Length: 273
Image 1 (cartoon, rainbow, N blue to C red):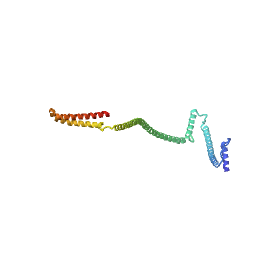
Image 2: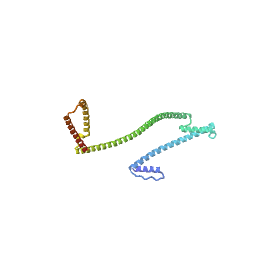
Image 3: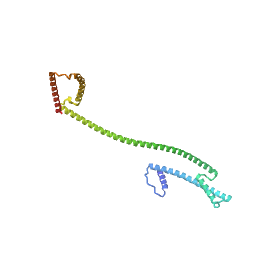
Image 4: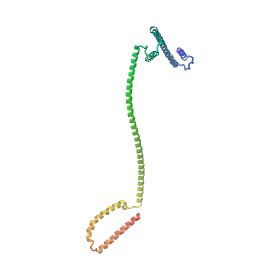
């Protein structure tokens, strides 16, 4: 535990340098975590140091190669950077830039050709992917267009349904109001009929003068009138004969009694009303 704490303190001092190390709770978990971080940091720092040394060595090698090539050009060919024309210097600068962009070791044709081939392959793959994406994009646009059409139709159907629902709701409400009115009217008429029936029962009304009885009596009278027509036709030859005085007197008295009975019945009906 003490060795770990010493290792952690040493690593934190190295990381923060002149700045004070922040306070932290010292316990087993925090010490273990910081110890692992310290070990990981040391490994990465070691790898970074090795990489830096390798790059420095390569840089020194490149510098040596560059110096050797300059010496060869200067002594063997008689060329130097100062004696090169501006277009030549521009061509060399472009060649160097291309080599750096392609990531080749040198500017020889054997280094440029594989790099260009790889770049061409990547370009072809990119164009192939582009065409694939364009096809997928066209298909997606068609789907989006169809989806928008379906969405518009659904929205129109929803608006129509809402309007129809509002109309049906208004009709249903109107029918409910009419039903309530009819129910109240039926109840009122039922109560009125009961009151009238009770009133008629209290007055001991004769059922023979009700509308139904009168209508039935009228039908019977019409039937009797139809039956009387042939009888009148049979009696017509006897109408010119002189009547028997005694029989005539009896008929007159009988007719008076029937008339008195009808007058009495008529008076009773008038009084009842």
